[in-house]
Amino acid sequence: MSLSEELLDAGRRLLINNYNRAPVVMSRGEGCVLWDVDGHRFLDMTAGIAVCVLGHGHAGLSQALALQAARLHHTSNLYFIEAQIRLAEALARRAFAGKAFFCNSGTEANEAALKLARRYQIVLRNQPKRVELISFEGSFHGRTMGALSVTGQGKYREGFGPLLPDVRFIPFGDAEAARKAITERTCAVIIEPIQAEGGINLPPPGYLQELRRLCSERSALLIFDEVQTGVGRTGTFYAFEREAMVPDIVTLAKGLAGGVPMGAMLASEAVAEAFGPGTHAATFGGNPLASAAALYVQQVMDEQNLLGRCQDSGAYLGSALARLAERRRPKTRGARGRGLLQGLVMEADAAAVVVKAREHGLLISVAGGNVVRFAPPLVVGRAEIDEALSILDAVLSEV
Picture 1: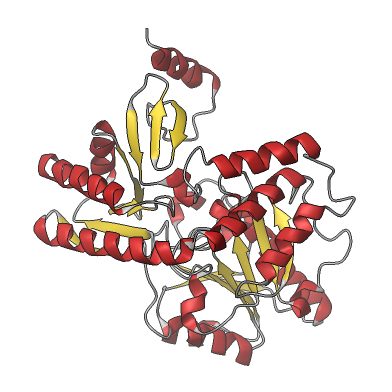
Picture 2: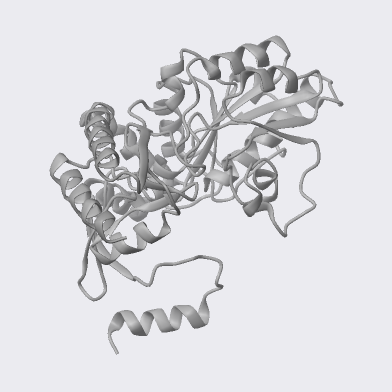
C-alpha cells in the first residue's frame, strides 16, 4: 500500500465526510506546482480556491511567518497588535479608506458585515423596522447561518432551515428588480461584484453604479463581498475599482494572507461607529501571525506589481480560453471572466472535465455547475498558462 493509499484510508475513517475531496494528498508546492505524497506533479490553476496569490512555498512569505512566529504569534484582541495596525494602514491606502475588523474567513467577514449593517440601522439610525436584507440569485456568501441566509443558491441552504427571516433574493444584473426591491425596509444590499461560485457571472455595465445610487437614495447600506474577487484577483485590488463607486462595507478573505486563514470587514467611518466595545469579536482575528502574513502580501503586491501582472496574465488567459471555447464547440459555450478569475463555460456539467484534468496533472475547479474555473496564483506565467490550456484541450477531446 502506498503512502497516499494509507493516508486516504485513514482520512476516510477519521474525517467527517462533508467535503467532496479528490483522492489526492498534497505534500509540497513551489510556485504554481504541487506534488502529492507519492511524488506526482500537478499544475495548480486553483491556488487553494483563489487563496495562494503568491503561489506555493514562497520563500519571503515563509520567512515573514517564521520571524513573526518566533517573536509573537497570539495575544488576542485584549490588546493592540502591531502587525494588525500596520495591515489596517496598508489596506486604508487602497481604494477603500475605512476602518477594519479582522477575523478568520470570508464567511466570518460577511457575518460581521450583516451584523454591522443591522446594528447601524437599528441603533445608530433608530430605524428598528429597517431589517430586510437583499441578496441575489446565484450568489454565495458563506456557510455560517447568517451568510448562508443571504446565499442565493438553494443547494447550500437545503436542510438548514429555518434561516434568517427578512431576506429577499432578486435576479443578478436586473436593475428594474433592484429598483422595486430596495425600499424603506431595506437594511442592506449584499452583492459580489462578480459572482465567482455562481459561475463567474459579470454584472452588466452600469449595474453596480445603479445599486450604489439606489442604496444612497433610499438610505440602505451597500455591502460588497470581495472574498474571492478582492486582493488583486481581477487585476485591481478590489473588483469594484473599475466601477467608479465605493460601497459602505467591503469584505475580504481568501488571498488576503496568502494562505494563512484570515478575513476582514472594512466599513466607512460613519458605519463603523455602530460597533462599540463588546458588540462583536473574534479571538483569533488579526492575530500577529496572520497579520504579518497579510502585511507581507501587501508589500509584495506593490514591489512586484502583481496587479499589473494579473491584468496581463488575465488578458492572456481569457483570450486563450475564448479561442479554446470556439475550437471545442459544441462541448463549450464560451469563456468569461476578469483578471485571473476566468471560466470556460461548458454545454454540460463541468465536473467530468475537472476530474479528467486532474488525472492529466492539471488542477482546476467547477463554478456554477457548468463552468470550469481558473483562479491561479497571481504569479502565474504565460508558459504555465500555455501548459494548462494544452492539457485542457486534450481533456476536452476525451470527455
